[in-house]
Length: 115
Length: 116
Image (cartoon, rainbow over all chains, first blue to last red; front, side, top):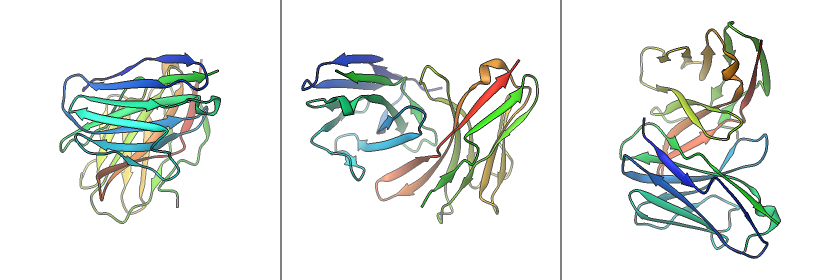
């Protein structure tokens, strides 16, 4: 199956700093990438959808200035958590879908802890 | 309104027995896809099985099969011969078209525990 690589797997940062998470499709062109947030023992909550070369579409309640998403190429999307605070601590996971593809492939996730 | 419903927050099954995880969905679009993903404690999301809304036969992938009942809008996952490694969270998901292309919606999940 298709491979999606997500880095870093975990990150600890100080409050007020920014953190960048990368999501790469390794063996296919990801026309659409999705970013999810997951709290412990809960389901995935879609944060935003990004299509290559265009601005991301954010879900209601997600601050676009807080969670910057860039999808500059068909193989890379990044999520930057700007001025992170402890309440931003969570598990973030990306997924990718190719043109006309039926399936959604996931990265391995990033556990963010903001001190 | 909840688009994907998984009514079983937790399930237990004895090793080597079969287990069914329930999933019902809600959509008015005739074209959609249904998925099951497994999430072990490591956090990764592992694709298990896919069923398209126009598929005539129930999908099967090894020990996984999907009991697709279109009229009832249900897509239950059946795991045969459970193994200890099957203990994980299981999410049912639906893909349907929206204004931006495709939209994936996940259910709340079912935690499966396989007992030795």
